Image (cartoon, rainbow over all chains, first blue to last red; front, side):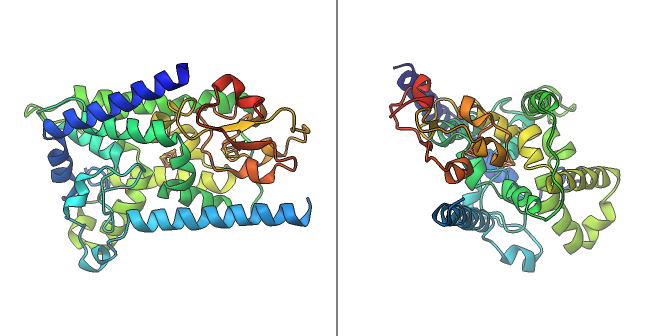
Length: 45
Length: 298
Ligand code: SF4
Ligand code: SF4
């Protein structure tokens, strides 16, 4: 019972977060960052 | 070990190797990036992969969730990324750390290094237990707090984990770009050498200790570990079948106390314990098995 509850809560929260994130334009922000070489990631700074 | 049993262990390790190889190749499927000396710029990069895989790798087809989380927090609009958090929560609740055991390219690299025939080190239990907490500190401080709270006068922050720690970024992004691009090579300074040092330390440790980065440092592994106890995919040990030989504990790459707590946050669901168990006492847990029944069902 507790297991089902935790899973359901996590599913609902995860789905809601993704929807909120996409609506706030975060997928676009991620794309913007990911299509340029990230100088910090590669150690240039 | 009987012949049939040995074959089962071999079959399992071959299958897992094939899946890990395929996952690494799929996450980094844009081989042309190396020839073009650039990175992939298609729309699939808006999608967060569930694994630690640098999006500045010339061949990466998707985004690294840990990089993406910091990228959103670094901007001026949001201090936390619901998009990334939600994606990881969904993967976590379905798979838990199965992703670490089968899909993550950086986990795969560590597994390959550990196969080198050298003497192996067993981290003392107390030290191992303490060091495991480090990855949660890294997740909280370097991935969430510092990128969200510290910003310059334009309101822009830094990706602290990517910049100062991530060895996957150095391996998949840093080294290829520095080798391919003369201009970037000229810009490489103290930071690059620091990151190279971190990478070398992690790779060297991986030869002697199994999965040191996953055990002690990885913020993504830390996040998924929060779901291991209740994710859809879990494991169970049947106490009635167990003969107490301890082979499961001996073979576990994450030093899990297999018979006591197989679904703890450290288990990467690699399935090795299940394959080596001579009594077939270890199996996948059913969807409805309660956590209390994980050690005695059937
Ligand atoms: S702990 Fe991190 S590096 Fe290790 S397999 Fe999991 S996601 Fe990959
Ligand atoms: S407990 Fe079993 S499945 Fe989990 S990491 Fe250890 S050997 Fe792999």
